[in-house]
Length: 301
Image 1 (spheres, one colour):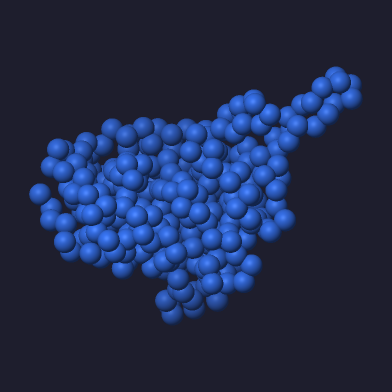
Image 2 (cartoon, rainbow, N blue to C red):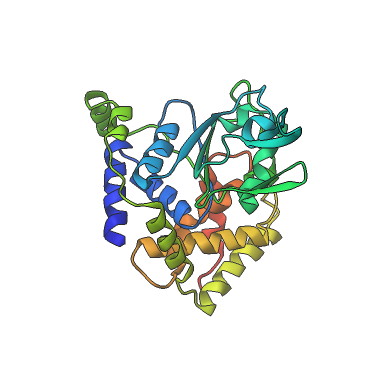
């Protein structure tokens, strides 16, 4: 399994150039069965990253372009009257796919954004008092433009909290950009990529991630981090129990990617910025500053 995972990451790095750490964090998020938010300026490869992962994982992907006139029914689906049956029947919307690319999610109104809340938390949707299960695996990879750009609606904390991780890509280094300028078209590269991991293999790896061991001392360190954020007045709000579970699951996935069967404090430190940054400082895309005090002041047991 680890050989297949490394092969997948190697192929992804040939398409998304110079962003090895971000790709590993994105894959870590999927192994932890979480949803991913990619926030950056237009044109740095956010959508390309999502399409790359969907192709290499063999997932049925659906792109939804979020705009200011988008309605919840455009995402979830709606009940339409069937004259032959003299009854309403539910017609599923684009949400019923294994991977959803919510492109420019903060260009839609909060009403449209809220259509994802139940789906992301419970992997189901409710329409007219009827509940419909979503396919498994189910992931949402959302891209978001910086909040200072025109035509954006800030994501509320409840929506941000549904994302296990938030990452940024940034500009490529000079060497990576030269390779991008002289290389093959990225869309063509993605189309020519074979599947490296099947959905069944991905689910098997997710089960193995859940079995990664966490010691009592490691949980003490995790709880010390949670307590620090709740007692420190520098943060918008402290980390919730759900955030603590997210941090633990992400650390397990990172340890698994390092071919270890137990979580180390370094695993928590590696994923901390991506998992906690958007929860501690929702409006700040640079999560490094938000977690620097934690790494400095919370001692490892």
